[in-house]
Image 1 (cartoon, one colour):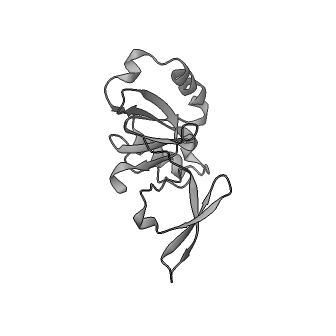
Image 2 (cartoon, rainbow, N blue to C red; image 1 turned 90 degrees about the vertical axis):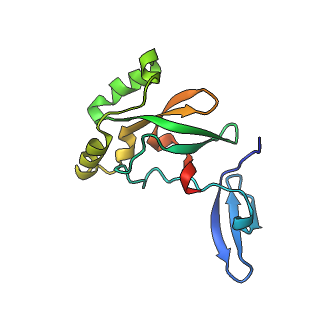
Image 3 (cartoon, rainbow, N blue to C red; image 1 turned 30 degrees about the horizontal axis):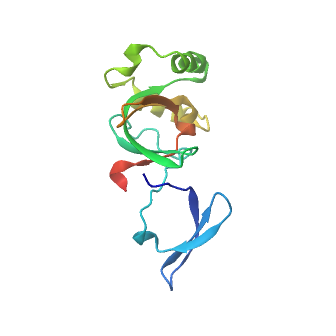
Length: 153
């Protein structure tokens, strides 16, 4: 498996066609990004929560391992602040049924109403279950997820 590194594009030199890339460890380098295999991770703080997530293929970046893992979003939960403890309990002690068939619990309607109620960060309220291609599965809060849409590479 290739090892991946988090970085951001600092600037672009139009004349040379190169991007200056600043890595998380402070190192910088110049690349022709179009010639490199790369993923652009979603900014989950600005992601449109009304967009359909269920069934989407994603690449999830695991920071500790510096690896990307492919999977599918098979469940989406939207909770209100007062429901967070119940959802946290579900995450801590999942039941076998929580890892069965794909489900969506009114995510579009709930996300729309959450976005419209004036709260600044609805993404704290969205949890997704990812079924990884290697057979593993996990629940993640959208604010903690570093990923790229597999179909938008």
